[in-house]
Length: 304
Image 1 (cartoon, rainbow, N blue to C red):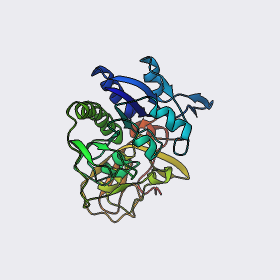
Image 2 (image 1 turned 180 degrees about the vertical axis):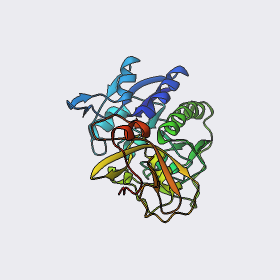
Image 3 (image 1 turned 45 degrees about the vertical axis):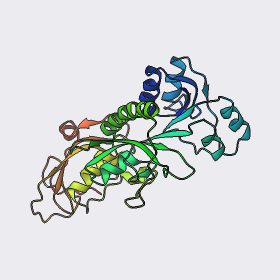
């Protein structure tokens, strides 16, 4: 088919490669404009931009598309059979949704209607879901409300992080959208029951509340790794927690956030959590043992 591809982050790249490998003619790629990044704030192109240029595909980077009639006309003039959208980052107006012959297909990283919205991968882990997956959706003007063409699920393990689940779902998405284009299954409207929304994440979502259970905090740490990251403070220094192990809910009388030993085992509202990896400001992530060699944290220390 003659396709337009629209995506921005790493998640989108396997889908672009899968479409090309399947023999589709990707006539243009839309992605977010280069953004300042790194300490020098130099402009950095998106992963999709880099992948498209490497494949010799024309790249368009409009900052906005919703009310840009000239962009709508340019999009329609591509005469595409379909547009494939994967974490593009801009809301498409009806003029663009209706322009391709088969409309716009979205690769969404959840089993719709659960976790519509901006952070479905992280939300599924934090909520303790037993599975996640990918939905190929026929886009409409709502927020992830379109009818679903295909879905594929994958279990969420007790060690999955947002990073590991992200990588698995991105590969599924590429495979599934190729299948959707080949089979063109009948779209099935989403059920009205079971709708949940995954809000846009900010740094504050990573703040650990030690009054919560060890299991909940463990899911928060895993679900927010690598971004925005779960964190706590020790003597007013922010510590980013990279990995932890929830321990059996043995009784303890310590206040939540208090260390139960000299090895960074922390009392929670229910149970306890042993910190395995952590990061000080300006430093790399390190093991708890390496951290403690440089900064002992004795039993009875309070983290907040």
